[in-house]
Image (cartoon, rainbow, N blue to C red; front, side, top):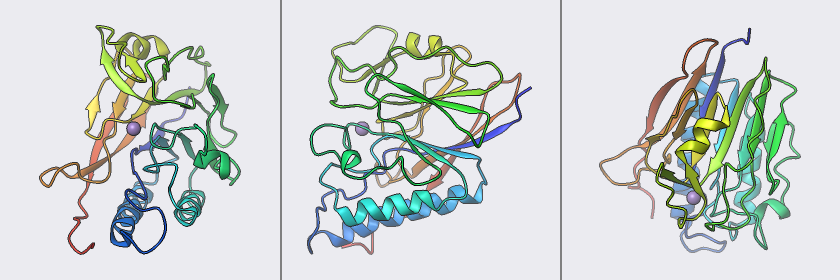
Amino acid sequence: MRPPLRIAHASDIHLDTDYHEGDTNLGLRDYYRGVFDDLLRAIVGHAPELMLLPGDLFDSNRASPDTVIWAAERLASLPFPVAMIPGNHDCLDEGAIYTRFDFDRPPGLHFIGAADGERRRLAELPVNVWGRGMIQHHPKFRPLAKTPEPEPGRWNLGLGHGIYTGSEGNDYRSSPIGASEIAESGFDYLALGHHHALLDVSQGDTGAYFSGAPVPISPDRKGTYLIVELAEGRPPTVTIHHLDRSRSGSS
Ligand SMILES: [Mn+2]
């Protein structure tokens, strides 16, 4: 009998959008940092046991070293572990942030970047987290290819960053994620990133969501993140939460 598990799921923060050091766009840098701070403060308030961050923490691999270290310190100081993968904006291509700064080193931070996929068995929780590191956002990259068999007695979670293609293939899209791949994954919960709007793509027994981005995607839509409750013998309970820091006040 697995104990209940509370997870926070947030994605697509895009730190350092249009900021790459210097004095230009400092207001925009600080706005995105402020949203990230709001997000982490709100999540801490839910007292989750684990946070999942499926990609695009940074807007590009040109994010400033200052912001990269700032973000790593924020994540490492949380009172629960964080499991994360790269997205297309902070992918593992040449010059990647994650090859310059090891997000897997700070205690409590689990960066999964293996190109063939890797299952991380967390020591601190009865949880396995699987993910695959994106090198290039391309139709040949399948974020959910070759997922492992679920391990009995543990919560089996997945991370993925890509485009949901539904049941009709659409394999010309970059980083396609098909409905059947979700259904066959066996994950108890799959945390997805890339779509900036919240989207429920659950299939079969697998709860699967795009959390949406914490930065509002339009003036009339607030930013979002999810709190997911897993308990033996019932589907995941997913609660949508909103963030609404406006851009006014940033230059
Ligand atoms: Mn993306």
